[in-house]
Image 1 (tube, helix red, strand yellow):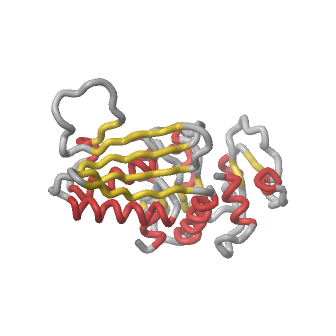
Image 2: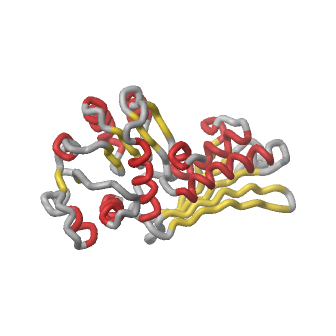
Image 3: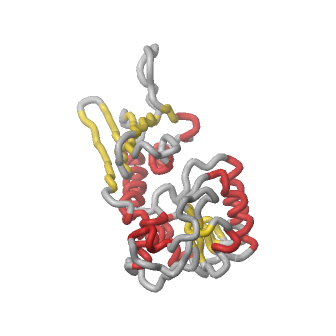
Length: 258
């Protein structure tokens, strides 16, 4: 994602944005290299660093596609330096989520499980479909496919779709989520249940399908990503939108006017 964002900034896919820093883990083999050369062979005049404070020194907005483990430190430094935050990192635990929410009291934060316009439209459609089908005997299953290197399962997008479906059905996702199935079960599938199924393999960028299944018919709502640039452009749109906003925790639906 860092490479995709760099390429999209250089191509001015979203106007009037410029790179001011680039950050990776201390063991990154490209540390010290020009981020533009690493991303696509065109110099950006910005080297890849490993120190957060240095990387954000001249920034208005930080775009974060990293790992949950460093979220607390990032939250503290961005809030202390009044730098807006766009978060595409998924798999956050309770402590990381709390750190984000605390930072959002001091700086504007956009956090979304997926930055693409299509997925955020899908989130809205899933919630509306669930509300329309509530109490009509439809089961809900969510299937997602990602590349073999993805760390968390189910994906943040799948969980977001589950939340949208649960809102539409007026359920609590924590109470109705079923993550995969195996063995023999007694009785029928519970009517109040949302199933999640994660596929990992190959180079899938991200496929998500929400299935509403009833006796005699089913409705499927799907999104397939074919380029990471889709997510990069969304993150850049979020960065442009959030700069100068009041402190608060925003979503891509706010950014996109959905």
